[in-house]
Length: 450
Image 1: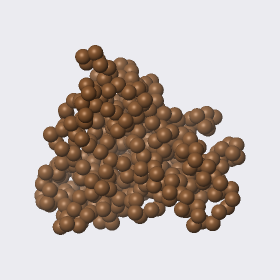
Image 2: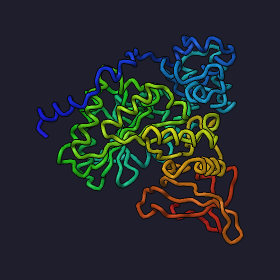
Image 3: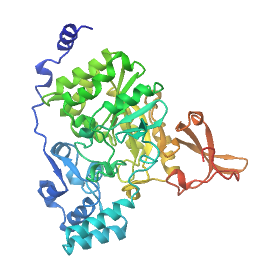
């Protein structure tokens, strides 16, 4: 489409002023660990609880904004409120010994260098990059590693633009927590997209590019456009799908409604599809309450009007959503709003996983019970799925084969494409929370992918 024609077309699709008049612009105000004591709602909590939060926030990243504080948390239910648990650190997120070390350092006001050494030691013990993210997933161009890309599965490349390696707020369970602690040795990021383009030219088998983080939607539209537009040309015709991983529809829906470049962002989404690419926003949702605010629903409506798909994914988490009724309501609400339920994940073996992990057997029971509560159109969410080193492994259920109680599993996606859709069995273990806790069934010595 000629440029002038495209601009006219896009202008005709802009929403009318009255459509967003009920949502006045809001200034983005954020609090980090250093400003935690400035959050008004925390003043009413016991001093001991506030100190515990500060201890944990010294190790794991903390960032929260005014919108989620004021709109998503029921402060009468704190600390049990699920969104509070999603955003604010809890003592049990660290091992008792680790918590005690940091608490002692803070109480005794140890020199900063000593505190930093303690924190670095604890972070190193938290498996900061699970599933071979740094060892096995980083690709090369001309023999040089590209730190801002990951290529684990044949068809899909992940792209980590450096200006998108932050979020509007941080989830306490996040498996990419190491991106946000300020340690460059732990961060995956690149400052520009030239290396991505060079890699894609060499790898015509890649059909999908996932722009991820952090959250790419923290970027100004002009910067996001500069990264994406080169992929819309004929040179990259083999790239059929662009995905953008984001929590902004929950943590800052103003990005699509009232931000000064919100309309430009929606225009970019239209342009991607006008170039013949399929566009999917991989939206992260953990609880149905995230879908309740009117501005969150307006953001969803505006994104859908561009023709982009919204696919919803999130992990099953103790203390937040380990309840079939929560998932059933989440999926049903998503469908009603035009969102496609995509994945229920198992909490990864990293960071604060000890606080959030759910045994695989229980995870499957919650998934099954939730599926029984919704119609077929809401049963598109795959899971519970572990994004493990060999690939995405789905727990399909508990059964009995030749008199042996087993866990049935399936490889949804694999490092080796030949593994995809292969079923396999593990010995029944009601305590296992991750793939490496399982043993092959029927006396076999190893799983097929080992």
